Length: 332
Image (cartoon, rainbow, N blue to C red; front, top):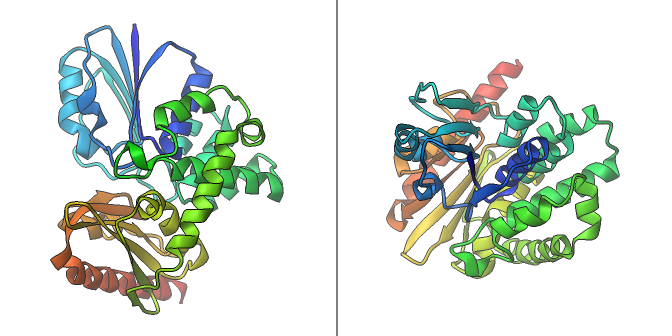
Protein backbone atom coordinates (compact mmCIF):
# COMPACT_ATOMS: atom_id res chain seq x y z
CA UNK A 1 0.00 0.00 0.00
CA UNK A 2 1.24 3.49 -0.90
CA UNK A 3 0.43 6.14 1.68
CA UNK A 4 0.16 9.66 0.28
CA UNK A 5 -0.38 12.45 2.80
CA UNK A 6 -1.63 15.74 1.36
CA UNK A 7 -1.76 18.55 3.89
CA UNK A 8 -1.93 22.30 4.25
CA UNK A 9 1.48 23.59 5.28
CA UNK A 10 0.16 25.65 8.20
CA UNK A 11 0.02 24.65 11.87
CA UNK A 12 -3.36 22.95 11.54
CA UNK A 13 -2.51 20.75 8.58
CA UNK A 14 0.92 19.92 9.95
CA UNK A 15 -0.30 19.00 13.44
CA UNK A 16 -3.25 17.04 12.06
CA UNK A 17 -0.92 14.83 10.04
CA UNK A 18 1.52 14.54 12.94
CA UNK A 19 -1.25 13.17 15.17
CA UNK A 20 -2.33 10.62 12.58
CA UNK A 21 1.21 9.42 11.96
CA UNK A 22 1.99 9.17 15.66
CA UNK A 23 -1.06 6.90 15.87
CA UNK A 24 -0.28 4.98 12.65
CA UNK A 25 3.38 5.18 11.60
CA UNK A 26 3.88 4.44 7.89
CA UNK A 27 6.33 5.20 5.12
CA UNK A 28 4.50 8.10 3.52
CA UNK A 29 4.80 10.43 0.56
CA UNK A 30 4.35 14.08 1.60
CA UNK A 31 2.50 16.56 -0.58
CA UNK A 32 2.31 20.06 0.89
CA UNK A 33 3.15 23.66 0.19
CA UNK A 34 2.54 27.24 1.15
CA UNK A 35 -0.67 28.30 2.87
CA UNK A 36 -2.04 29.71 -0.39
CA UNK A 37 -1.44 26.46 -2.30
CA UNK A 38 -4.88 24.97 -1.80
CA UNK A 39 -5.15 22.80 -4.94
CA UNK A 40 -2.61 20.25 -3.71
CA UNK A 41 -4.65 17.19 -4.64
CA UNK A 42 -4.08 18.06 -8.31
CA UNK A 43 -0.43 17.04 -7.80
CA UNK A 44 -1.24 13.49 -6.71
CA UNK A 45 -0.99 10.52 -9.08
CA UNK A 46 -2.56 7.34 -7.72
CA UNK A 47 -3.45 3.72 -8.41
CA UNK A 48 -5.75 1.26 -6.60
CA UNK A 49 -2.98 0.48 -4.10
CA UNK A 50 -3.00 4.02 -2.65
CA UNK A 51 -4.45 5.42 0.56
CA UNK A 52 -4.58 9.20 0.25
CA UNK A 53 -5.05 11.29 3.39
CA UNK A 54 -6.10 14.91 2.82
CA UNK A 55 -5.88 17.40 5.68
CA UNK A 56 -7.01 21.01 6.06
CA UNK A 57 -7.68 21.67 2.37
CA UNK A 58 -10.97 23.00 1.03
CA UNK A 59 -12.95 20.16 -0.53
CA UNK A 60 -14.71 22.66 -2.78
CA UNK A 61 -11.35 23.67 -4.25
CA UNK A 62 -10.20 20.05 -4.59
CA UNK A 63 -13.45 18.34 -5.58
CA UNK A 64 -12.53 17.57 -9.21
CA UNK A 65 -9.16 16.18 -8.17
CA UNK A 66 -10.81 14.14 -5.40
CA UNK A 67 -13.22 12.55 -7.89
CA UNK A 68 -10.29 11.76 -10.21
CA UNK A 69 -8.37 10.09 -7.37
CA UNK A 70 -11.43 8.02 -6.42
CA UNK A 71 -12.04 7.06 -10.06
CA UNK A 72 -8.47 5.73 -10.21
CA UNK A 73 -9.35 3.27 -7.44
CA UNK A 74 -7.57 4.88 -4.49
CA UNK A 75 -8.97 5.10 -0.98
CA UNK A 76 -9.25 8.60 0.52
CA UNK A 77 -9.69 9.87 4.06
CA UNK A 78 -10.47 13.58 4.16
CA UNK A 79 -10.38 15.74 7.30
CA UNK A 80 -11.20 19.43 6.98
CA UNK A 81 -13.03 22.33 8.62
CA UNK A 82 -13.63 24.62 5.64
CA UNK A 83 -17.16 25.02 4.36
CA UNK A 84 -17.88 22.44 1.66
CA UNK A 85 -20.83 22.05 -0.66
CA UNK A 86 -21.94 18.78 -2.26
CA UNK A 87 -19.57 16.39 -0.48
CA UNK A 88 -19.23 13.24 -2.64
CA UNK A 89 -20.66 9.99 -1.33
CA UNK A 90 -18.33 7.15 -2.32
CA UNK A 91 -17.50 3.73 -0.80
CA UNK A 92 -13.77 4.52 -0.82
CA UNK A 93 -14.12 8.00 0.73
CA UNK A 94 -14.12 8.69 4.47
CA UNK A 95 -14.97 12.40 4.83
CA UNK A 96 -14.93 14.15 8.19
CA UNK A 97 -15.89 17.72 7.36
CA UNK A 98 -17.00 20.05 10.15
CA UNK A 99 -17.12 23.80 9.43
CA UNK A 100 -18.11 24.74 12.98
CA UNK A 101 -16.56 28.05 14.02
CA UNK A 102 -14.78 26.45 16.98
CA UNK A 103 -13.30 23.50 15.05
CA UNK A 104 -10.09 23.04 13.13
CA UNK A 105 -8.77 20.01 11.28
CA UNK A 106 -6.51 19.01 14.15
CA UNK A 107 -9.43 18.99 16.60
CA UNK A 108 -11.32 16.72 14.19
CA UNK A 109 -8.33 14.37 14.12
CA UNK A 110 -8.12 14.65 17.91
CA UNK A 111 -11.74 13.45 18.14
CA UNK A 112 -11.04 10.68 15.62
CA UNK A 113 -8.11 9.45 17.75
CA UNK A 114 -9.91 9.80 21.07
CA UNK A 115 -7.62 12.58 22.33
CA UNK A 116 -4.46 10.42 22.26
CA UNK A 117 -2.23 13.31 21.15
CA UNK A 118 -4.29 16.24 22.37
CA UNK A 119 -1.35 18.55 23.04
CA UNK A 120 -0.77 18.75 19.28
CA UNK A 121 -4.42 19.65 18.69
CA UNK A 122 -3.94 22.47 21.20
CA UNK A 123 -0.86 23.69 19.32
CA UNK A 124 -2.87 23.69 16.09
CA UNK A 125 -5.89 25.48 17.56
CA UNK A 126 -3.70 28.26 18.92
CA UNK A 127 -1.91 28.53 15.58
CA UNK A 128 -5.15 28.55 13.61
CA UNK A 129 -6.50 31.50 15.59
CA UNK A 130 -8.91 29.55 17.82
CA UNK A 131 -7.71 30.49 21.33
CA UNK A 132 -11.00 29.63 23.04
CA UNK A 133 -10.92 26.12 21.57
CA UNK A 134 -7.25 25.73 22.48
CA UNK A 135 -7.84 26.90 26.05
CA UNK A 136 -10.81 24.59 26.50
CA UNK A 137 -8.75 21.59 25.37
CA UNK A 138 -5.80 22.75 27.49
CA UNK A 139 -8.00 22.91 30.59
CA UNK A 140 -9.22 19.39 29.89
CA UNK A 141 -5.56 18.33 29.63
CA UNK A 142 -4.81 20.10 32.95
CA UNK A 143 -2.22 22.42 31.41
CA UNK A 144 -1.18 25.52 33.36
CA UNK A 145 -0.91 29.04 31.98
CA UNK A 146 2.83 28.78 31.30
CA UNK A 147 2.35 25.53 29.40
CA UNK A 148 -0.51 27.04 27.42
CA UNK A 149 1.67 30.05 26.59
CA UNK A 150 4.41 27.80 25.18
CA UNK A 151 1.96 25.83 23.04
CA UNK A 152 0.42 29.09 21.82
CA UNK A 153 3.81 30.44 20.80
CA UNK A 154 4.69 27.18 19.07
CA UNK A 155 1.39 27.07 17.21
CA UNK A 156 1.70 30.65 16.02
CA UNK A 157 5.28 30.04 14.88
CA UNK A 158 4.35 26.93 12.90
CA UNK A 159 1.45 28.80 11.32
CA UNK A 160 3.52 31.88 10.49
CA UNK A 161 5.95 29.75 8.50
CA UNK A 162 3.32 28.72 5.93
CA UNK A 163 2.62 32.22 4.60
CA UNK A 164 4.38 33.69 1.60
CA UNK A 165 4.10 34.28 -2.13
CA UNK A 166 6.74 31.67 -2.95
CA UNK A 167 9.29 29.50 -1.17
CA UNK A 168 11.80 32.36 -1.02
CA UNK A 169 9.56 34.10 1.53
CA UNK A 170 9.61 31.13 3.91
CA UNK A 171 12.07 30.34 6.65
CA UNK A 172 11.74 26.61 5.91
CA UNK A 173 9.55 24.61 3.55
CA UNK A 174 6.54 23.08 5.36
CA UNK A 175 7.61 19.61 4.23
CA UNK A 176 10.92 19.97 6.04
CA UNK A 177 9.27 21.58 9.04
CA UNK A 178 6.90 18.62 9.31
CA UNK A 179 9.86 16.23 9.30
CA UNK A 180 11.39 18.14 12.22
CA UNK A 181 8.09 18.21 14.13
CA UNK A 182 7.54 14.51 13.52
CA UNK A 183 10.66 13.65 15.52
CA UNK A 184 8.82 14.72 18.67
CA UNK A 185 6.05 13.00 20.58
CA UNK A 186 5.95 15.94 23.02
CA UNK A 187 5.45 19.50 21.72
CA UNK A 188 7.17 20.93 24.79
CA UNK A 189 10.33 19.04 23.83
CA UNK A 190 10.12 20.51 20.33
CA UNK A 191 9.65 23.98 21.78
CA UNK A 192 12.68 23.65 24.05
CA UNK A 193 15.03 21.74 21.75
CA UNK A 194 14.79 22.94 18.15
CA UNK A 195 16.53 26.13 17.05
CA UNK A 196 14.09 26.48 14.14
CA UNK A 197 11.34 27.30 16.65
CA UNK A 198 13.31 30.26 18.03
CA UNK A 199 14.15 31.39 14.49
CA UNK A 200 10.46 31.38 13.57
CA UNK A 201 9.40 33.12 16.79
CA UNK A 202 11.99 35.88 16.31
CA UNK A 203 11.07 36.37 12.66
CA UNK A 204 7.38 36.50 13.52
CA UNK A 205 8.02 39.12 16.19
CA UNK A 206 10.00 41.33 13.79
CA UNK A 207 7.37 41.06 11.06
CA UNK A 208 4.54 41.83 13.48
CA UNK A 209 6.34 44.99 14.60
CA UNK A 210 6.49 46.11 10.97
CA UNK A 211 2.79 45.32 10.42
CA UNK A 212 1.73 47.22 13.53
CA UNK A 213 3.17 50.42 12.07
CA UNK A 214 0.37 50.41 9.46
CA UNK A 215 -2.66 52.33 10.70
CA UNK A 216 -6.09 51.04 9.60
CA UNK A 217 -7.48 52.43 6.36
CA UNK A 218 -10.97 51.97 7.81
CA UNK A 219 -12.04 51.79 11.44
CA UNK A 220 -15.42 51.92 13.15
CA UNK A 221 -17.12 50.42 16.19
CA UNK A 222 -17.46 46.94 14.71
CA UNK A 223 -14.76 46.45 12.08
CA UNK A 224 -11.30 47.51 10.97
CA UNK A 225 -9.32 47.15 7.72
CA UNK A 226 -5.56 47.39 7.27
CA UNK A 227 -3.65 47.50 3.99
CA UNK A 228 -0.10 46.18 3.87
CA UNK A 229 2.51 46.76 1.15
CA UNK A 230 3.85 44.00 -1.08
CA UNK A 231 6.98 43.07 0.88
CA UNK A 232 8.49 39.83 2.14
CA UNK A 233 7.56 40.60 5.75
CA UNK A 234 3.95 41.39 4.88
CA UNK A 235 3.63 38.23 2.80
CA UNK A 236 4.82 36.20 5.77
CA UNK A 237 2.86 37.92 8.52
CA UNK A 238 -0.60 38.60 7.04
CA UNK A 239 -2.24 35.60 8.73
CA UNK A 240 -0.52 36.08 12.07
CA UNK A 241 -1.36 39.79 12.05
CA UNK A 242 -5.03 39.02 11.35
CA UNK A 243 -5.13 36.47 14.18
CA UNK A 244 -3.41 38.85 16.61
CA UNK A 245 -5.86 41.65 15.80
CA UNK A 246 -8.77 39.26 16.26
CA UNK A 247 -7.41 38.34 19.68
CA UNK A 248 -6.40 41.82 20.89
CA UNK A 249 -9.41 43.69 19.44
CA UNK A 250 -11.99 40.96 19.98
CA UNK A 251 -15.01 43.22 19.52
CA UNK A 252 -14.20 44.06 15.90
CA UNK A 253 -14.23 42.00 12.73
CA UNK A 254 -10.96 42.65 10.93
CA UNK A 255 -9.63 42.36 7.41
CA UNK A 256 -6.04 42.62 6.20
CA UNK A 257 -5.51 43.57 2.55
CA UNK A 258 -2.06 43.00 1.07
CA UNK A 259 -0.86 44.25 -2.30
CA UNK A 260 0.43 41.49 -4.59
CA UNK A 261 2.79 41.19 -7.53
CA UNK A 262 -0.04 41.05 -10.08
CA UNK A 263 -1.63 44.31 -8.95
CA UNK A 264 -4.49 42.72 -7.00
CA UNK A 265 -5.07 42.43 -3.25
CA UNK A 266 -4.93 39.35 -1.06
CA UNK A 267 -7.46 39.55 1.78
CA UNK A 268 -7.61 37.79 5.16
CA UNK A 269 -10.78 38.16 7.25
CA UNK A 270 -11.36 37.27 10.90
CA UNK A 271 -14.83 37.59 12.44
CA UNK A 272 -15.04 39.29 15.85
CA UNK A 273 -14.49 36.71 18.60
CA UNK A 274 -17.82 37.38 20.28
CA UNK A 275 -19.76 36.63 17.09
CA UNK A 276 -21.13 33.16 16.44
CA UNK A 277 -21.64 33.27 12.66
CA UNK A 278 -24.71 31.63 11.21
CA UNK A 279 -24.47 29.30 8.19
CA UNK A 280 -24.79 31.34 5.03
CA UNK A 281 -24.02 34.59 6.88
CA UNK A 282 -20.39 34.28 7.92
CA UNK A 283 -16.83 35.00 6.77
CA UNK A 284 -17.05 32.42 4.00
CA UNK A 285 -20.29 33.92 2.66
CA UNK A 286 -18.76 37.41 2.83
CA UNK A 287 -15.76 36.41 0.70
CA UNK A 288 -17.41 34.14 -1.88
CA UNK A 289 -18.94 36.92 -4.04
CA UNK A 290 -15.40 38.25 -4.39
CA UNK A 291 -13.97 34.90 -5.50
CA UNK A 292 -12.81 33.80 -2.06
CA UNK A 293 -13.99 31.50 0.69
CA UNK A 294 -12.96 29.74 3.86
CA UNK A 295 -14.79 28.92 7.06
CA UNK A 296 -17.32 30.53 9.36
CA UNK A 297 -14.96 32.65 11.44
CA UNK A 298 -12.05 33.14 9.03
CA UNK A 299 -11.87 33.41 5.27
CA UNK A 300 -9.93 35.09 2.52
CA UNK A 301 -9.72 36.26 -1.07
CA UNK A 302 -6.70 35.40 -3.22
CA UNK A 303 -7.09 38.07 -5.91
CA UNK A 304 -9.31 41.06 -5.27
CA UNK A 305 -9.07 43.73 -7.97
CA UNK A 306 -7.92 46.96 -6.34
CA UNK A 307 -10.86 48.82 -7.84
CA UNK A 308 -13.18 46.55 -5.79
CA UNK A 309 -11.55 47.38 -2.45
CA UNK A 310 -14.17 49.98 -1.52
CA UNK A 311 -16.92 47.53 -2.46
CA UNK A 312 -15.37 44.88 -0.25
CA UNK A 313 -14.94 47.28 2.68
CA UNK A 314 -18.60 48.29 2.39
CA UNK A 315 -19.65 44.63 2.36
CA UNK A 316 -17.44 43.93 5.39
CA UNK A 317 -18.81 46.94 7.28
CA UNK A 318 -22.42 45.96 6.53
CA UNK A 319 -21.81 42.35 7.63
CA UNK A 320 -19.94 43.35 10.79
CA UNK A 321 -22.71 45.70 11.89
CA UNK A 322 -25.36 43.07 11.09
CA UNK A 323 -23.49 40.44 13.11
CA UNK A 324 -23.06 42.84 16.02
CA UNK A 325 -26.76 43.74 15.98
CA UNK A 326 -27.71 40.05 16.00
CA UNK A 327 -25.41 39.44 18.96
CA UNK A 328 -26.87 42.40 20.85
CA UNK A 329 -30.40 41.17 20.21
CA UNK A 330 -29.49 37.68 21.43
CA UNK A 331 -28.09 39.12 24.68
CA UNK A 332 -31.34 40.87 25.56
